[in-house]
Image (tube, rainbow, N blue to C red; front, side):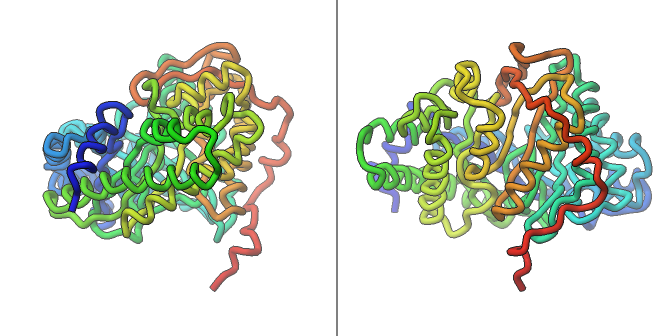
Length: 454
């Protein structure tokens, strides 16, 4: 039973501390939609999404009103589209047609974002995978609500450096094709290692082949809540600090569990997982960076930052696991620069660099996220950054990702403006030393020795 004190506490979290359910994401398998005829394929996909997700937005709004908890986004994730379109799509124009159909379909439904215009190529790539990847600059330039991802590595398979190298070029081309909007296309494209099948957060969400035909995953976010409660234990021991974070994560996850169960029941779709991720927004007081400062840092980037983030991430996971039997996705703390005012302040103060962010990704939930860099950064340098981040994920058996934006026509000292959840980003300097001879080698970086478990 939920007590009146818990109800009052939750209302306070919502009204004063920016607690929200960031997303209800419906995962939909499109494997049964495959067809060799492009028009039939598009009709199959459109009809299935309309049938399963027709009530997603109304149900989300209904639950939000009844519980008094903001549900910020209603989203859809689909089977990595390269697995479905191989027999029907033969050129960039074909993939753009599929993407536009998806964009129009979810716009009709009122769905905010769709993830899964994706390819999983950690060990090798099919002709369909490569064709899809090469279409991404046009797809992301010509659609508004489509997100794309490419999984280039895993602990089991190693890192596909041929695709890593290609993704450097693709990110540069995407930036150019959306140069009039501060290269916004790159904000919807993420390169992953160890991508999970059940992640409800964008831009890396897709519906994995291990999932059911349709599923409801919920992502909860409450960095403002955590920051607030830590203000009550300043100067206390690490034991008290950790216990406070765990208890708070437990309460936040319980809210998500309630929303997920209600959504699954009303949509007649199985409940999948709760993703408890401290995902910031540009709103003041809704910042992971502020939590790190409350723990004891002047700015993120100061000595001790990686340790503080590791502590935060671990306690969030421990608290969340106790609150729900099915915690999954990414779950932990996100550190996207443009979406977190505290991170932006740290960059502007000179405390936070790209290299320090990379160190922090060893212990956070994602990786180098929403980072704007000079538009003249070479594609090989971007590929090297992707390779570095993938290596962290591969060796540490965790998900890592790169969502990086080489903003056309801008340099260090400038800003890129995106608005909404994407916020704005200061252009960060990048190491200028060359890595092209490394990334231009052919083939795969082998999986680590600890991958051999069977």
